[in-house]
Length: 79
Image (cartoon, rainbow, N blue to C red; front, side):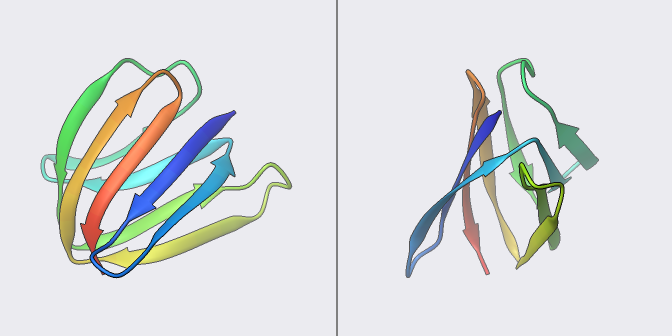
């Protein structure tokens, strides 16, 4: 399981996810449990995640940064 933390200038929220899909600056990528640690810039696109109930949720992102470490995905972004 992945903990997804989404921080925007006006709010913060946390979700549990089985997969997170991100619009990276060098191309879109997927984060699964056990993913290697990384930091990446984000570009305009959809931040998507799959819930434990296998439903998909999304949030449009204008830009931002993501950090992946120890099954925690922290996204700081403009929405």
